[in-house]
View 1 (cartoon, rainbow, N blue to C red):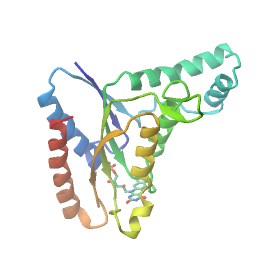
View 2: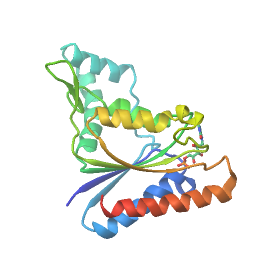
View 3: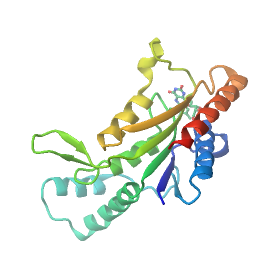
Length: 210
Ligand SMILES: Cc1cc2nc3c(=O)[nH]c(=O)nc-3n(C[C@H](O)[C@H](O)[C@H](O)COP(=O)(O)O)c2cc1C
């Protein structure tokens, strides 16, 4: 029985295009993998801890080989429990909107929590970086208001896919399959609905072999 972590990075619930596509993926996946455990993380849930002065100080103390105070330990435990939850999954499904050409800030906050030396990546003796979350597939449903097609001038503005896949790869997650819904705004609701329907069909196909 595999454990699948479904991470929703849109606050838009039923109005979200990325969630609609990822939900369709999950529904199709369940049909083929009825016994698997599916855990959902809503990144706009207020319980996601801030990566602030206290968390960064606890991180730097580890990096500089200094002792944690009881307060540091409490803060760091909150970070580690989220990392453990992430690493305990065998597969990942992500619903990700484009916000200002990149990912929403709550997803960046989650990444700042997850990407820690010794937990999700390490530095080898030769000085290169090595991801520690390896051999697990990721499905990503991207949604964008505009269009960022390959080989067009707009492609350079797409720092959503580029950044997300870079940081996932940094943690060792290189088996990435994705579907993109675009444009969800620029060409009106009829086009958006048509693009969503097409993306849902592709997502269902990909779910069969995930
Ligand atoms: C704060 C914010 C910033 C956005 N920035 C962009 C952007 O840079 N480029 C773009 O094409 N669309 C942008 N959009 C539009 C969203 O990408 C679009 O509505 C998409 O469908 C959001 O995904 P969702 O439907 O899953 O929430 C932005 C929307 C919001 C709320």
